Length: 117
Image (cartoon, rainbow, N blue to C red; front, top):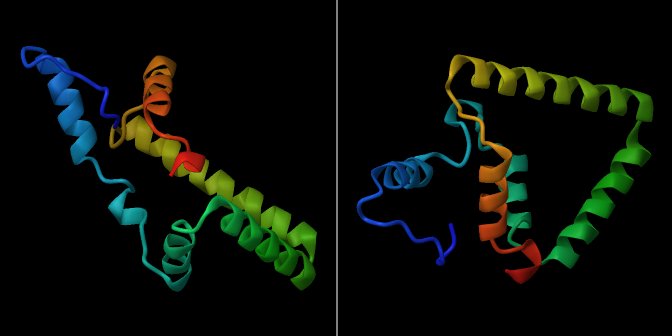
């Protein structure tokens, strides 16, 4: 949400959209589990861009050093396939709503860039 967003008090449809946007959870609660890794991620996201890049590089280096890259790549593809199935199911059953490209662009344009924070 950006401070320059203005909605007229008589525009009930826009007010309803704004209310739904503000009331929606950031994540689907049933798919969110607070594990040690999500706690670490939550803290890491508070770091500067340079610090996050440094950590990401170290994590990738350690993952490459640990095991078979083919297995890791297959696991990544499987995880993405599962995520796509879940998201597709959510869209089909109506538990989430898709955005038009125009709506998505408006949202992205109204949010500050990561580097600005």
